[in-house]
Image (cartoon, rainbow, N blue to C red; front, side, top):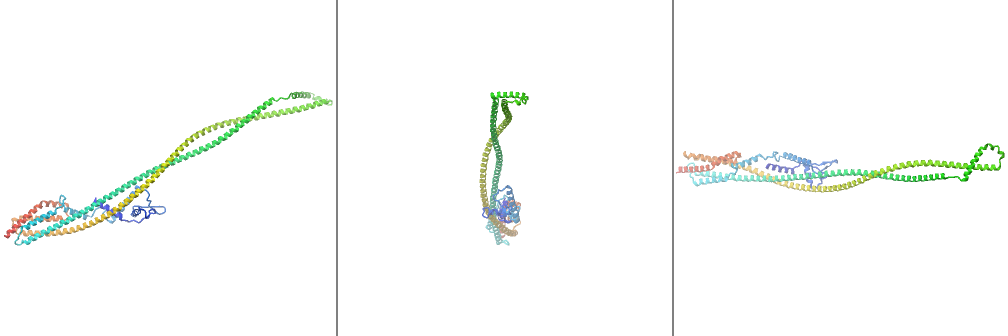
Length: 578
Protein backbone atom coordinates (compact mmCIF):
# COMPACT_ATOMS: atom_id res chain seq x y z
CA UNK A 1 0.00 0.00 0.00
CA UNK A 2 2.85 2.40 0.85
CA UNK A 3 4.54 1.68 -2.44
CA UNK A 4 1.27 2.33 -4.28
CA UNK A 5 0.86 5.64 -2.47
CA UNK A 6 4.39 6.67 -3.37
CA UNK A 7 3.89 5.63 -6.98
CA UNK A 8 0.58 7.50 -7.27
CA UNK A 9 2.10 10.63 -5.74
CA UNK A 10 5.07 10.55 -8.10
CA UNK A 11 2.79 9.96 -11.08
CA UNK A 12 0.65 12.97 -10.18
CA UNK A 13 3.76 15.08 -9.65
CA UNK A 14 5.20 14.07 -13.00
CA UNK A 15 1.90 14.67 -14.75
CA UNK A 16 1.70 18.16 -13.31
CA UNK A 17 5.26 19.27 -14.13
CA UNK A 18 6.38 17.28 -17.21
CA UNK A 19 5.62 18.15 -20.83
CA UNK A 20 7.10 16.61 -23.98
CA UNK A 21 4.72 17.71 -26.72
CA UNK A 22 4.55 20.70 -29.01
CA UNK A 23 2.15 23.55 -28.29
CA UNK A 24 -1.22 23.59 -30.04
CA UNK A 25 -3.11 26.74 -31.01
CA UNK A 26 -6.90 26.52 -31.07
CA UNK A 27 -8.86 29.03 -33.08
CA UNK A 28 -11.95 28.91 -30.83
CA UNK A 29 -10.15 29.07 -27.42
CA UNK A 30 -9.16 32.59 -26.44
CA UNK A 31 -6.32 33.31 -24.04
CA UNK A 32 -8.67 35.01 -21.57
CA UNK A 33 -10.97 31.99 -21.32
CA UNK A 34 -11.26 30.54 -17.81
CA UNK A 35 -10.24 27.03 -19.04
CA UNK A 36 -7.45 28.20 -21.38
CA UNK A 37 -4.54 27.05 -19.16
CA UNK A 38 -6.06 23.61 -18.54
CA UNK A 39 -6.87 23.06 -22.23
CA UNK A 40 -3.42 24.13 -23.41
CA UNK A 41 -1.65 22.13 -20.69
CA UNK A 42 -3.47 18.89 -21.54
CA UNK A 43 -3.05 19.58 -25.26
CA UNK A 44 0.70 20.09 -24.80
CA UNK A 45 0.84 16.76 -22.95
CA UNK A 46 -0.94 15.10 -25.88
CA UNK A 47 -3.95 14.06 -23.81
CA UNK A 48 -6.38 16.38 -25.60
CA UNK A 49 -6.41 16.88 -29.37
CA UNK A 50 -8.25 19.33 -31.59
CA UNK A 51 -10.20 18.92 -34.82
CA UNK A 52 -8.75 20.21 -38.09
CA UNK A 53 -11.49 21.72 -40.25
CA UNK A 54 -11.57 22.18 -44.02
CA UNK A 55 -9.94 25.62 -43.69
CA UNK A 56 -6.81 23.99 -42.23
CA UNK A 57 -7.30 25.50 -38.76
CA UNK A 58 -7.54 23.56 -35.51
CA UNK A 59 -10.70 23.88 -33.40
CA UNK A 60 -11.26 22.63 -29.85
CA UNK A 61 -15.11 22.67 -29.89
CA UNK A 62 -15.32 23.06 -26.13
CA UNK A 63 -19.13 23.10 -26.06
CA UNK A 64 -19.46 19.63 -27.61
CA UNK A 65 -20.54 16.77 -25.31
CA UNK A 66 -17.87 14.31 -24.09
CA UNK A 67 -18.69 10.72 -25.10
CA UNK A 68 -17.57 7.57 -23.31
CA UNK A 69 -15.33 6.70 -26.26
CA UNK A 70 -13.56 10.06 -26.04
CA UNK A 71 -13.19 9.58 -22.27
CA UNK A 72 -11.60 6.15 -22.80
CA UNK A 73 -9.15 7.56 -25.38
CA UNK A 74 -8.25 10.48 -23.08
CA UNK A 75 -7.60 8.18 -20.09
CA UNK A 76 -5.51 5.82 -22.25
CA UNK A 77 -3.39 8.73 -23.45
CA UNK A 78 -2.93 9.81 -19.83
CA UNK A 79 -1.79 6.33 -18.75
CA UNK A 80 0.49 5.99 -21.79
CA UNK A 81 2.03 9.38 -21.05
CA UNK A 82 2.60 8.55 -17.37
CA UNK A 83 4.10 5.13 -18.12
CA UNK A 84 6.35 6.50 -20.88
CA UNK A 85 7.69 9.52 -18.99
CA UNK A 86 8.21 7.98 -15.56
CA UNK A 87 9.68 4.79 -16.99
CA UNK A 88 12.10 7.03 -18.93
CA UNK A 89 12.98 9.31 -16.01
CA UNK A 90 13.42 6.43 -13.59
CA UNK A 91 11.73 8.35 -10.78
CA UNK A 92 10.14 5.18 -9.47
CA UNK A 93 10.92 1.61 -10.59
CA UNK A 94 8.23 0.20 -12.82
CA UNK A 95 7.56 -2.66 -10.42
CA UNK A 96 6.76 -0.12 -7.67
CA UNK A 97 9.62 -1.33 -5.33
CA UNK A 98 11.70 0.96 -3.16
CA UNK A 99 15.48 0.64 -2.91
CA UNK A 100 16.24 -2.83 -1.58
CA UNK A 101 19.27 -1.61 0.37
CA UNK A 102 17.19 0.79 2.44
CA UNK A 103 14.52 -1.84 3.06
CA UNK A 104 17.13 -4.43 4.06
CA UNK A 105 18.70 -1.95 6.45
CA UNK A 106 15.38 -1.10 8.01
CA UNK A 107 14.46 -4.78 8.36
CA UNK A 108 17.87 -5.61 9.88
CA UNK A 109 17.56 -2.78 12.40
CA UNK A 110 14.02 -3.81 13.22
CA UNK A 111 15.08 -7.42 13.78
CA UNK A 112 18.10 -6.39 15.82
CA UNK A 113 16.00 -4.25 18.14
CA UNK A 114 13.19 -6.77 18.74
CA UNK A 115 13.02 -10.05 20.61
CA UNK A 116 11.27 -13.27 19.64
CA UNK A 117 7.90 -11.84 20.70
CA UNK A 118 8.31 -8.74 18.54
CA UNK A 119 9.02 -6.37 21.47
CA UNK A 120 11.99 -3.97 21.59
CA UNK A 121 15.02 -5.18 23.55
CA UNK A 122 15.37 -3.30 26.84
CA UNK A 123 18.98 -2.12 26.56
CA UNK A 124 18.56 0.05 29.64
CA UNK A 125 17.98 -3.08 31.69
CA UNK A 126 21.23 -4.57 30.40
CA UNK A 127 23.01 -1.32 31.20
CA UNK A 128 21.63 -1.28 34.74
CA UNK A 129 22.71 -4.86 35.32
CA UNK A 130 26.22 -4.17 34.09
CA UNK A 131 26.39 -1.02 36.23
CA UNK A 132 25.26 -2.98 39.30
CA UNK A 133 27.89 -5.62 38.58
CA UNK A 134 30.51 -2.91 38.25
CA UNK A 135 29.47 -1.33 41.52
CA UNK A 136 29.69 -4.66 43.31
CA UNK A 137 33.16 -5.22 41.93
CA UNK A 138 34.16 -1.76 43.11
CA UNK A 139 32.63 -2.35 46.54
CA UNK A 140 34.70 -5.52 47.02
CA UNK A 141 37.87 -3.45 47.09
CA UNK A 142 39.99 -6.13 45.46
CA UNK A 143 43.70 -5.72 46.04
CA UNK A 144 45.90 -7.77 43.73
CA UNK A 145 49.34 -9.22 44.19
CA UNK A 146 51.82 -10.18 41.59
CA UNK A 147 50.93 -9.51 37.96
CA UNK A 148 47.28 -8.81 38.79
CA UNK A 149 47.50 -5.43 40.37
CA UNK A 150 44.99 -2.85 41.39
CA UNK A 151 45.78 -0.95 38.22
CA UNK A 152 44.81 -4.00 36.18
CA UNK A 153 41.51 -4.27 37.98
CA UNK A 154 41.00 -0.54 37.57
CA UNK A 155 41.79 -0.83 33.89
CA UNK A 156 39.32 -3.67 33.63
CA UNK A 157 36.82 -1.51 35.44
CA UNK A 158 37.47 1.39 33.07
CA UNK A 159 37.06 -0.89 30.09
CA UNK A 160 33.77 -2.14 31.45
CA UNK A 161 32.63 1.44 32.04
CA UNK A 162 33.68 2.36 28.53
CA UNK A 163 31.78 -0.63 27.23
CA UNK A 164 28.72 0.47 29.21
CA UNK A 165 29.05 4.00 27.85
CA UNK A 166 29.39 2.70 24.34
CA UNK A 167 26.39 0.49 24.90
CA UNK A 168 24.43 3.48 26.23
CA UNK A 169 25.49 5.58 23.24
CA UNK A 170 24.46 2.77 20.96
CA UNK A 171 21.12 2.62 22.73
CA UNK A 172 20.64 6.35 22.27
CA UNK A 173 21.54 6.09 18.62
CA UNK A 174 19.15 3.20 18.26
CA UNK A 175 16.48 5.36 19.87
CA UNK A 176 17.25 8.11 17.38
CA UNK A 177 17.10 5.56 14.60
CA UNK A 178 13.74 4.35 15.91
CA UNK A 179 12.60 7.98 15.92
CA UNK A 180 13.74 8.32 12.31
CA UNK A 181 11.88 5.13 11.46
CA UNK A 182 8.82 6.56 13.18
CA UNK A 183 9.18 9.73 11.10
CA UNK A 184 9.36 7.59 7.99
CA UNK A 185 6.26 5.77 9.12
CA UNK A 186 4.54 9.11 9.73
CA UNK A 187 5.54 10.22 6.24
CA UNK A 188 4.17 6.95 4.95
CA UNK A 189 0.93 7.59 6.81
CA UNK A 190 0.87 11.07 5.26
CA UNK A 191 1.29 9.42 1.89
CA UNK A 192 -1.59 7.12 2.81
CA UNK A 193 -3.70 10.18 3.57
CA UNK A 194 -2.63 11.68 0.25
CA UNK A 195 -3.52 8.41 -1.45
CA UNK A 196 -6.96 8.52 0.15
CA UNK A 197 -7.34 12.10 -1.06
CA UNK A 198 -6.27 11.08 -4.55
CA UNK A 199 -8.67 8.15 -4.47
CA UNK A 200 -11.41 10.47 -3.26
CA UNK A 201 -10.63 12.85 -6.12
CA UNK A 202 -10.70 9.90 -8.53
CA UNK A 203 -14.04 8.81 -7.12
CA UNK A 204 -15.34 12.35 -7.49
CA UNK A 205 -14.13 12.38 -11.07
CA UNK A 206 -15.83 9.03 -11.63
CA UNK A 207 -19.01 10.43 -10.08
CA UNK A 208 -18.73 13.47 -12.31
CA UNK A 209 -18.24 11.19 -15.31
CA UNK A 210 -21.33 9.24 -14.25
CA UNK A 211 -23.30 12.47 -13.92
CA UNK A 212 -22.07 13.62 -17.31
CA UNK A 213 -23.04 10.23 -18.76
CA UNK A 214 -26.51 10.53 -17.20
CA UNK A 215 -26.85 14.05 -18.59
CA UNK A 216 -25.72 12.83 -22.00
CA UNK A 217 -28.19 9.93 -21.89
CA UNK A 218 -30.93 12.38 -20.87
CA UNK A 219 -29.93 14.68 -23.73
CA UNK A 220 -29.93 11.68 -26.09
CA UNK A 221 -33.40 10.61 -24.92
CA UNK A 222 -34.63 14.18 -25.31
CA UNK A 223 -33.11 14.32 -28.78
CA UNK A 224 -34.83 11.05 -29.66
CA UNK A 225 -38.13 12.41 -28.31
CA UNK A 226 -37.61 15.61 -30.29
CA UNK A 227 -36.82 13.56 -33.40
CA UNK A 228 -39.98 11.51 -32.85
CA UNK A 229 -41.99 14.71 -32.41
CA UNK A 230 -40.34 16.14 -35.50
CA UNK A 231 -41.23 13.05 -37.54
CA UNK A 232 -44.78 13.21 -36.16
CA UNK A 233 -45.01 16.89 -37.08
CA UNK A 234 -43.69 16.12 -40.54
CA UNK A 235 -46.20 13.29 -40.94
CA UNK A 236 -49.00 15.56 -39.78
CA UNK A 237 -47.78 18.29 -42.10
CA UNK A 238 -47.76 15.81 -44.98
CA UNK A 239 -51.26 14.61 -44.06
CA UNK A 240 -52.37 18.22 -43.74
CA UNK A 241 -50.91 18.97 -47.16
CA UNK A 242 -52.76 15.96 -48.59
CA UNK A 243 -55.97 17.14 -46.96
CA UNK A 244 -55.37 20.64 -48.28
CA UNK A 245 -54.83 19.23 -51.77
CA UNK A 246 -57.99 17.12 -51.48
CA UNK A 247 -59.87 20.12 -50.14
CA UNK A 248 -58.61 22.23 -53.03
CA UNK A 249 -59.63 19.51 -55.51
CA UNK A 250 -63.06 19.20 -53.93
CA UNK A 251 -63.42 23.00 -53.90
CA UNK A 252 -62.49 23.16 -57.58
CA UNK A 253 -64.91 20.36 -58.38
CA UNK A 254 -67.60 22.10 -56.35
CA UNK A 255 -66.92 25.33 -58.22
CA UNK A 256 -67.07 23.50 -61.56
CA UNK A 257 -70.26 21.75 -60.48
CA UNK A 258 -71.72 25.06 -59.36
CA UNK A 259 -70.89 26.55 -62.76
CA UNK A 260 -72.34 23.48 -64.49
CA UNK A 261 -75.47 23.65 -62.33
CA UNK A 262 -75.84 27.33 -63.18
CA UNK A 263 -75.44 26.50 -66.88
CA UNK A 264 -77.99 23.70 -66.56
CA UNK A 265 -80.34 26.06 -64.78
CA UNK A 266 -79.92 28.55 -67.59
CA UNK A 267 -80.53 25.76 -70.11
CA UNK A 268 -83.61 24.72 -68.16
CA UNK A 269 -84.78 28.32 -68.14
CA UNK A 270 -84.20 28.52 -71.90
CA UNK A 271 -85.97 25.20 -72.41
CA UNK A 272 -88.81 26.40 -70.24
CA UNK A 273 -89.08 29.44 -72.50
CA UNK A 274 -88.94 27.19 -75.56
CA UNK A 275 -91.64 24.98 -74.06
CA UNK A 276 -93.76 28.05 -73.52
CA UNK A 277 -93.08 29.11 -77.12
CA UNK A 278 -94.03 25.64 -78.36
CA UNK A 279 -97.14 25.72 -76.28
CA UNK A 280 -97.99 29.13 -77.69
CA UNK A 281 -97.30 27.81 -81.16
CA UNK A 282 -99.50 24.79 -80.48
CA UNK A 283 -102.21 27.09 -79.27
CA UNK A 284 -101.82 29.25 -82.34
CA UNK A 285 -101.93 26.20 -84.63
CA UNK A 286 -105.01 24.93 -82.88
CA UNK A 287 -106.56 28.34 -83.22
CA UNK A 288 -105.57 28.48 -86.86
CA UNK A 289 -107.03 25.03 -87.46
CA UNK A 290 -110.17 26.12 -85.77
CA UNK A 291 -110.22 29.23 -87.89
CA UNK A 292 -109.61 27.17 -91.02
CA UNK A 293 -112.32 24.76 -90.02
CA UNK A 294 -114.61 27.64 -89.31
CA UNK A 295 -113.84 29.47 -92.56
CA UNK A 296 -117.01 29.60 -94.72
CA UNK A 297 -117.56 31.36 -98.01
CA UNK A 298 -120.34 33.83 -98.21
CA UNK A 299 -123.62 32.57 -99.60
CA UNK A 300 -123.41 34.78 -102.59
CA UNK A 301 -119.91 33.54 -103.30
CA UNK A 302 -121.14 29.99 -102.95
CA UNK A 303 -124.06 30.55 -105.17
CA UNK A 304 -121.92 32.41 -107.57
CA UNK A 305 -119.39 29.62 -107.43
CA UNK A 306 -122.12 27.09 -108.12
CA UNK A 307 -123.43 29.26 -110.86
CA UNK A 308 -120.00 29.61 -112.31
CA UNK A 309 -119.46 25.91 -112.11
CA UNK A 310 -122.69 25.28 -113.92
CA UNK A 311 -121.81 27.88 -116.47
CA UNK A 312 -118.40 26.37 -116.88
CA UNK A 313 -119.93 23.00 -117.41
CA UNK A 314 -122.39 24.48 -119.84
CA UNK A 315 -119.67 26.37 -121.56
CA UNK A 316 -117.65 23.25 -121.80
CA UNK A 317 -120.53 21.33 -123.30
CA UNK A 318 -121.36 24.06 -125.64
CA UNK A 319 -117.79 24.93 -126.53
CA UNK A 320 -118.15 23.32 -129.87
CA UNK A 321 -121.04 25.54 -130.64
CA UNK A 322 -119.30 28.69 -129.68
CA UNK A 323 -117.41 28.92 -132.87
CA UNK A 324 -120.59 28.64 -134.76
CA UNK A 325 -122.28 31.22 -132.78
CA UNK A 326 -119.52 33.77 -132.97
CA UNK A 327 -121.39 35.70 -135.45
CA UNK A 328 -124.43 35.78 -133.17
CA UNK A 329 -122.84 37.20 -130.04
CA UNK A 330 -124.87 39.77 -128.39
CA UNK A 331 -124.00 42.34 -125.79
CA UNK A 332 -125.84 40.41 -123.23
CA UNK A 333 -123.83 37.34 -123.95
CA UNK A 334 -120.69 39.33 -124.00
CA UNK A 335 -121.52 40.87 -120.67
CA UNK A 336 -122.38 37.51 -119.30
CA UNK A 337 -119.15 36.11 -120.59
CA UNK A 338 -117.24 38.94 -119.06
CA UNK A 339 -118.94 38.35 -115.76
CA UNK A 340 -118.19 34.70 -116.15
CA UNK A 341 -114.54 35.43 -116.76
CA UNK A 342 -114.51 37.71 -113.81
CA UNK A 343 -116.07 34.98 -111.69
CA UNK A 344 -113.56 32.49 -113.00
CA UNK A 345 -110.75 34.83 -112.10
CA UNK A 346 -112.17 35.30 -108.65
CA UNK A 347 -112.61 31.56 -108.33
CA UNK A 348 -109.06 31.00 -109.50
CA UNK A 349 -107.85 33.53 -106.99
CA UNK A 350 -109.92 31.87 -104.25
CA UNK A 351 -108.55 28.51 -105.37
CA UNK A 352 -105.02 29.82 -105.37
CA UNK A 353 -105.59 31.35 -101.96
CA UNK A 354 -106.97 28.05 -100.71
CA UNK A 355 -103.99 26.17 -102.11
CA UNK A 356 -101.55 28.64 -100.60
CA UNK A 357 -103.42 28.46 -97.34
CA UNK A 358 -103.33 24.67 -97.51
CA UNK A 359 -99.65 24.65 -98.27
CA UNK A 360 -99.01 27.06 -95.44
CA UNK A 361 -101.11 24.91 -93.17
CA UNK A 362 -99.26 21.79 -94.29
CA UNK A 363 -95.93 23.50 -93.80
CA UNK A 364 -97.09 24.71 -90.42
CA UNK A 365 -98.09 21.17 -89.49
CA UNK A 366 -94.76 19.80 -90.68
CA UNK A 367 -92.91 22.48 -88.74
CA UNK A 368 -95.08 21.79 -85.71
CA UNK A 369 -94.39 18.06 -85.95
CA UNK A 370 -90.69 18.71 -86.39
CA UNK A 371 -90.61 21.19 -83.52
CA UNK A 372 -92.66 18.83 -81.40
CA UNK A 373 -90.14 16.01 -82.01
CA UNK A 374 -87.26 18.32 -81.29
CA UNK A 375 -89.01 19.57 -78.18
CA UNK A 376 -89.72 16.00 -77.06
CA UNK A 377 -86.09 15.08 -77.70
CA UNK A 378 -84.96 18.17 -75.83
CA UNK A 379 -87.35 17.35 -73.00
CA UNK A 380 -85.88 13.80 -72.83
CA UNK A 381 -82.36 15.15 -72.89
CA UNK A 382 -83.36 17.70 -70.30
CA UNK A 383 -84.84 14.97 -68.13
CA UNK A 384 -81.68 12.91 -68.45
CA UNK A 385 -79.60 15.98 -67.68
CA UNK A 386 -81.77 16.67 -64.65
CA UNK A 387 -81.30 13.08 -63.48
CA UNK A 388 -77.54 13.34 -64.03
CA UNK A 389 -77.54 16.68 -62.24
CA UNK A 390 -79.43 15.13 -59.35
CA UNK A 391 -76.87 12.32 -59.19
CA UNK A 392 -74.02 14.84 -59.35
CA UNK A 393 -75.70 16.93 -56.67
CA UNK A 394 -76.06 13.80 -54.50
CA UNK A 395 -72.40 12.95 -55.07
CA UNK A 396 -71.46 16.52 -54.29
CA UNK A 397 -73.55 16.46 -51.15
CA UNK A 398 -71.77 13.29 -50.06
CA UNK A 399 -68.44 14.85 -50.93
CA UNK A 400 -69.40 17.99 -49.05
CA UNK A 401 -70.33 15.87 -46.02
CA UNK A 402 -66.99 14.05 -46.31
CA UNK A 403 -65.31 17.41 -46.81
CA UNK A 404 -66.97 18.74 -43.67
CA UNK A 405 -65.72 15.67 -41.79
CA UNK A 406 -62.26 16.16 -43.31
CA UNK A 407 -62.36 19.83 -42.38
CA UNK A 408 -63.23 18.89 -38.80
CA UNK A 409 -60.41 16.31 -38.87
CA UNK A 410 -58.04 18.90 -40.29
CA UNK A 411 -59.13 21.34 -37.60
CA UNK A 412 -58.47 18.69 -34.98
CA UNK A 413 -55.11 17.93 -36.58
CA UNK A 414 -54.31 21.63 -36.65
CA UNK A 415 -55.11 21.90 -32.95
CA UNK A 416 -53.01 18.78 -32.26
CA UNK A 417 -50.23 20.21 -34.38
CA UNK A 418 -50.39 23.48 -32.48
CA UNK A 419 -50.30 21.56 -29.20
CA UNK A 420 -47.33 19.54 -30.45
CA UNK A 421 -45.59 22.72 -31.54
CA UNK A 422 -46.22 24.20 -28.10
CA UNK A 423 -44.86 21.07 -26.42
CA UNK A 424 -41.90 21.02 -28.80
CA UNK A 425 -41.13 24.65 -28.04
CA UNK A 426 -41.49 23.98 -24.30
CA UNK A 427 -39.20 20.95 -24.56
CA UNK A 428 -36.70 22.95 -26.59
CA UNK A 429 -36.71 25.75 -24.02
CA UNK A 430 -36.41 23.28 -21.15
CA UNK A 431 -33.64 21.45 -22.97
CA UNK A 432 -31.81 24.72 -23.53
CA UNK A 433 -32.18 25.62 -19.84
CA UNK A 434 -31.05 22.14 -18.76
CA UNK A 435 -28.10 22.28 -21.14
CA UNK A 436 -27.12 25.73 -19.89
CA UNK A 437 -27.43 24.56 -16.27
CA UNK A 438 -25.43 21.44 -17.10
CA UNK A 439 -22.74 23.48 -18.79
CA UNK A 440 -22.61 25.78 -15.76
CA UNK A 441 -22.42 22.79 -13.38
CA UNK A 442 -19.71 21.18 -15.47
CA UNK A 443 -17.80 24.45 -15.53
CA UNK A 444 -18.07 24.78 -11.74
CA UNK A 445 -17.01 21.16 -11.27
CA UNK A 446 -14.08 21.60 -13.63
CA UNK A 447 -13.04 24.74 -11.76
CA UNK A 448 -13.31 22.92 -8.42
CA UNK A 449 -11.41 19.93 -9.80
CA UNK A 450 -8.69 22.19 -11.16
CA UNK A 451 -8.50 24.00 -7.82
CA UNK A 452 -8.37 20.70 -5.91
CA UNK A 453 -5.76 19.35 -8.32
CA UNK A 454 -3.65 22.48 -7.86
CA UNK A 455 -3.92 22.17 -4.08
CA UNK A 456 -3.20 18.46 -4.35
CA UNK A 457 -0.16 19.12 -6.53
CA UNK A 458 1.15 21.69 -4.05
CA UNK A 459 0.53 19.33 -1.12
CA UNK A 460 2.11 16.41 -2.96
CA UNK A 461 5.11 18.54 -3.89
CA UNK A 462 5.58 19.61 -0.28
CA UNK A 463 5.06 16.05 1.00
CA UNK A 464 7.46 14.63 -1.56
CA UNK A 465 10.01 17.27 -0.68
CA UNK A 466 9.68 16.44 3.01
CA UNK A 467 9.79 12.72 2.25
CA UNK A 468 12.82 13.14 0.03
CA UNK A 469 14.54 15.21 2.70
CA UNK A 470 13.55 12.67 5.34
CA UNK A 471 14.79 9.79 3.21
CA UNK A 472 18.08 11.58 2.65
CA UNK A 473 18.32 12.21 6.38
CA UNK A 474 17.48 8.58 7.10
CA UNK A 475 20.06 7.37 4.59
CA UNK A 476 22.67 9.69 6.08
CA UNK A 477 21.75 8.61 9.60
CA UNK A 478 21.81 4.96 8.55
CA UNK A 479 25.28 5.44 7.12
CA UNK A 480 26.43 7.13 10.30
CA UNK A 481 24.81 4.44 12.42
CA UNK A 482 26.45 1.72 10.38
CA UNK A 483 29.85 3.35 10.70
CA UNK A 484 29.34 3.88 14.43
CA UNK A 485 28.07 0.32 14.82
CA UNK A 486 31.17 -0.93 13.03
CA UNK A 487 33.31 1.20 15.36
CA UNK A 488 31.41 -0.19 18.33
CA UNK A 489 31.93 -3.67 16.98
CA UNK A 490 35.65 -3.00 16.74
CA UNK A 491 35.73 -1.61 20.24
CA UNK A 492 33.64 -4.52 21.51
CA UNK A 493 36.08 -6.92 19.87
CA UNK A 494 38.94 -5.05 21.53
CA UNK A 495 37.12 -5.15 24.85
CA UNK A 496 36.44 -8.83 24.37
CA UNK A 497 40.12 -9.46 23.70
CA UNK A 498 41.00 -7.50 26.82
CA UNK A 499 38.51 -9.50 28.83
CA UNK A 500 40.04 -12.66 27.47
CA UNK A 501 43.48 -11.38 28.47
CA UNK A 502 42.15 -10.59 31.92
CA UNK A 503 40.68 -14.06 32.17
CA UNK A 504 44.04 -15.53 31.17
CA UNK A 505 45.75 -13.45 33.83
CA UNK A 506 43.19 -14.51 36.39
CA UNK A 507 43.68 -18.15 35.44
CA UNK A 508 47.28 -17.94 36.50
CA UNK A 509 46.24 -17.31 40.07
CA UNK A 510 43.30 -19.65 40.25
CA UNK A 511 43.52 -23.08 41.76
CA UNK A 512 42.73 -26.12 39.73
CA UNK A 513 39.49 -26.58 41.69
CA UNK A 514 38.48 -23.03 40.93
CA UNK A 515 38.91 -23.43 37.20
CA UNK A 516 35.31 -24.57 37.04
CA UNK A 517 34.27 -20.92 37.21
CA UNK A 518 36.30 -20.08 34.12
CA UNK A 519 33.61 -21.26 31.67
CA UNK A 520 31.23 -18.90 33.39
CA UNK A 521 33.42 -15.87 32.67
CA UNK A 522 34.16 -17.14 29.18
CA UNK A 523 30.48 -17.77 28.66
CA UNK A 524 29.71 -14.22 29.84
CA UNK A 525 32.22 -12.82 27.37
CA UNK A 526 30.80 -14.93 24.60
CA UNK A 527 27.24 -13.88 25.42
CA UNK A 528 28.22 -10.20 25.45
CA UNK A 529 29.94 -10.67 22.10
CA UNK A 530 26.90 -12.44 20.72
CA UNK A 531 24.57 -9.68 21.94
CA UNK A 532 26.84 -7.03 20.43
CA UNK A 533 27.00 -8.97 17.17
CA UNK A 534 23.23 -9.45 17.11
CA UNK A 535 22.80 -5.72 17.73
CA UNK A 536 25.20 -4.38 15.10
CA UNK A 537 25.03 -7.00 12.36
CA UNK A 538 22.28 -7.01 9.74
CA UNK A 539 21.19 -10.47 10.73
CA UNK A 540 18.15 -12.24 9.51
CA UNK A 541 15.07 -12.59 11.61
CA UNK A 542 15.65 -16.30 12.14
CA UNK A 543 19.20 -15.66 13.42
CA UNK A 544 18.04 -12.98 15.83
CA UNK A 545 15.23 -15.17 17.15
CA UNK A 546 17.63 -18.08 17.61
CA UNK A 547 20.12 -15.79 19.36
CA UNK A 548 17.44 -14.43 21.66
CA UNK A 549 16.27 -17.95 22.48
CA UNK A 550 19.83 -18.91 23.36
CA UNK A 551 20.67 -15.77 25.32
CA UNK A 552 17.42 -15.29 27.25
CA UNK A 553 17.82 -18.34 29.58
CA UNK A 554 21.49 -17.56 30.14
CA UNK A 555 21.13 -13.88 30.99
CA UNK A 556 20.44 -14.26 34.72
CA UNK A 557 22.66 -17.31 35.01
CA UNK A 558 25.51 -15.49 33.33
CA UNK A 559 25.16 -12.54 35.68
CA UNK A 560 25.14 -14.79 38.75
CA UNK A 561 28.04 -16.80 37.42
CA UNK A 562 30.01 -13.65 36.76
CA UNK A 563 29.36 -12.44 40.30
CA UNK A 564 30.42 -15.81 41.70
CA UNK A 565 33.54 -15.85 39.57
CA UNK A 566 34.46 -12.35 40.65
CA UNK A 567 33.91 -13.33 44.28
CA UNK A 568 36.11 -16.40 43.89
CA UNK A 569 38.74 -14.36 42.09
CA UNK A 570 38.76 -11.77 44.84
CA UNK A 571 38.97 -14.49 47.47
CA UNK A 572 41.87 -16.11 45.65
CA UNK A 573 43.63 -12.80 45.30
CA UNK A 574 43.11 -12.08 48.98
CA UNK A 575 44.41 -15.53 49.81
CA UNK A 576 47.55 -14.99 47.77
CA UNK A 577 48.03 -11.60 49.35
CA UNK A 578 47.78 -13.02 52.81
